[in-house]
Amino acid sequence: MPSLDLLATFLEIYRTGSLSAAAQRLGVTQPAVTGQLARLEEQIGESLFVRSRKGVTPTPRAAALAGRVSLHLDGLRDALGSTEAEPALRGTVRIGGAAEIMTLRVLPALAPLTGRGLYLHATFGLAHDLLIDLAADRLDLVVSAIRPTHHALLAVPLADEEFLLVGPPSMARTVDADRLRTAPADALAALPLVAYGEELPILRRYWRSEFGHRPTNPVALVAPDLRAVLAAVEAGAGISALPRYLAEPALAAGRVVQLHGSEAPPLNTIHLAVRRGAPANPALTVVRERLTDAAAGWGEL
Image (cartoon, rainbow, N blue to C red):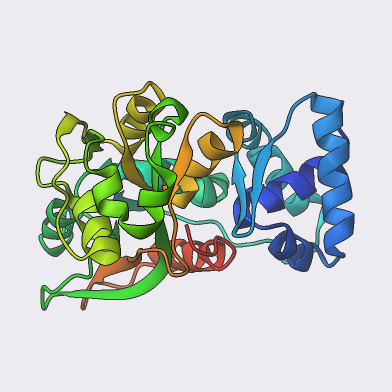
């Protein structure tokens, strides 16, 4: 059975998304954190994170392990720590966001707060719809892929999403490498697209940023969940532009390959939005602070 020290280190890596950030929070060196993670992975028998220059991305096994141990470890810290335990939280925080980032980043970062008595109610959806609900007092907080313009809302940047153009290896092998270097949009034009929406919201942004025009490729499949988009790409349906944090495990495993790269990949800023003049809510303040702290370790998503 893994020791509590190894599990505590694992949990900090999981919450911060970075070996260096976890080391800083634990007050140890990064090599020490790396060594503890290696020992834990050896004991478990599989990798828990996919490493990259942007940090680490948890595997499904890591997400499951964090869900099992986080509440218990946090409880032990409170019980064994100083008498100045964190205060209990009362009430509900209604939070909205896209299903993908909520599942892989936001809710894991907030889960420990439930051990202090907080009740979280999550709503998944499109940013535009969620911001309408926020302005109408149906939500307290929105993790938004667009910057709110409604006068009743206040937003601050939380993190940047970095988009990668990926496709299945079999499809990538059909692209002419020389033409891809000199005229990438033309080289990719025959490949079908797997899109998040009918208007090709992410793909359109990628093409305009990198190639200067909308994509002209045929559209093979539309799915309103980026995890489904990735699954379809892995299965060979076509190519797509996806956030790095979502695509990286599949890239590391070789299930997809990056088709095109640039020195400055397209970015989208994720905002944390609340209502202006909302009544004071200590629990909401703690949620905002927890997300801000966690995002500092995410880097570019």
